Length: 211
Image 1 (cartoon, rainbow, N blue to C red):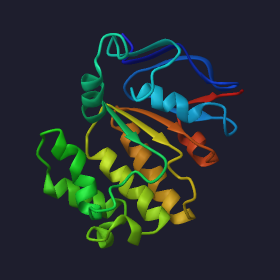
Image 2 (tube, helix red, strand yellow):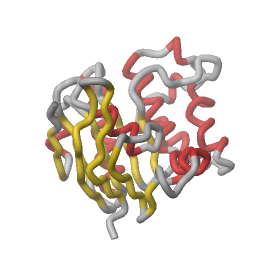
Image 3 (tube, one colour):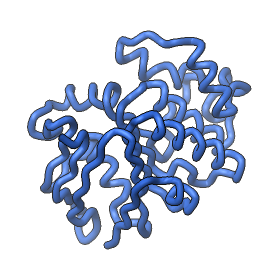
Image 4 (cartoon, helix red, strand yellow):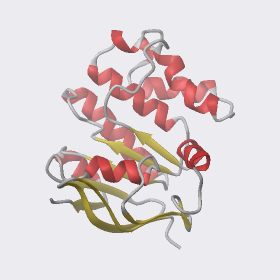
């Protein structure tokens, strides 16, 4: 049984939205989703994460339809146990420093944090020096890497990343590509929406979406 199955899934907002899409993924598979802005990439990621209900189609995680067999509370739990989502935009809590923003999701899930692992993750992503800073005090590249650290710390089997290297300088983008590739190599499922050609090259599968 495939761990993640997307069947004829679509969602429309007037004339725009997501046209029917289908694919399936198992552990160790890395999918890059590409396409013009407005073709539905982020919409698809929001649906897979359980945050947005599709107009039609099915999203199966380990054989369960997340919209017909899980309630909203169970879908929320899914995002902290099986599906990690590196979202695009300003999603960090302004009142918390970087370290507590990273810690918060796993603490809310009731799990303990391995402090050694946390510090190692900060080092790999080159954000150790900003751990006491607040989101408004860090650069755009640092902000994106903080979101990635927060997502990775959850240890989910599936990781979704929306434009993970968007607006990053070359050095920051290289770090993010390396960390994502390492995650995929650890027998996880990785789904990335991107305009970054180098990410599409390192992916195992590619899906080009159109209007």
